Length: 302
Image (cartoon, rainbow, N blue to C red):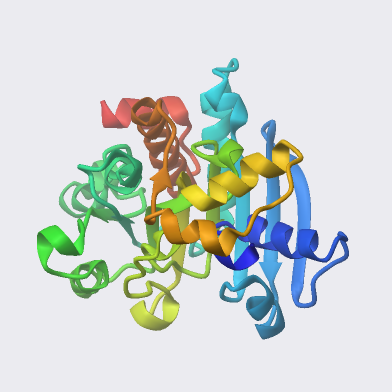
């Protein structure tokens, strides 16, 4: 079944290898550790070399998964705790020194809710480049931040990579932070998990529609991705549910022929995406401006 499972999460790729081997021993070229940040469980998977990259099917780099199930349960202070947990994990991956400008890119189709996390997050990020440039007395202490929502090929006729590269020529930042929707193999991780990585991203790869890669090799500067799983492949979901029910696995190669590439998303996806876009937008803003907190960001955006 492993070949039929779709997931963008390095955490889940590691889980699948360990499950297939019926053991929890470490994978060659992969290191992992678990801890808690502001009440949120965090798993950091480091792909150390090409052996690890081949094993997990992902590029060498760091992959940090922050689980925010308290947010979906509306626990007290869960929003602020989730924002701070994501911000604290993102900050170490950013260029050292607040004067290095950053370009934010929110990928996805704003008209399709499960794919709108990137464009909606842009509306919740502090954009400061123009303020730093035009009003240095008031905003000169802030990091210059610009933002772009490149849309999708079907509506623009241009790849996201082409539009981002064009913006880079004018903005000339020290790093790019890309926000996008992901896929998961577990229903429980939909809209409750954030993955942060310094290896870039291949938009659409999780849903079988891979576009041009966005990473340091293609863009020429560090690329940090922030993603939220909002969909699960139908066949992958069936496998997950049957495993939880203790049922034997059928012939997935036959079943996948009839799935039609169906992707499944939660019924509350509208409100969940809206909330997660705020979490990510605020977290990115705090990571870029560590002197600020959630209330400061909210005041800036209002």
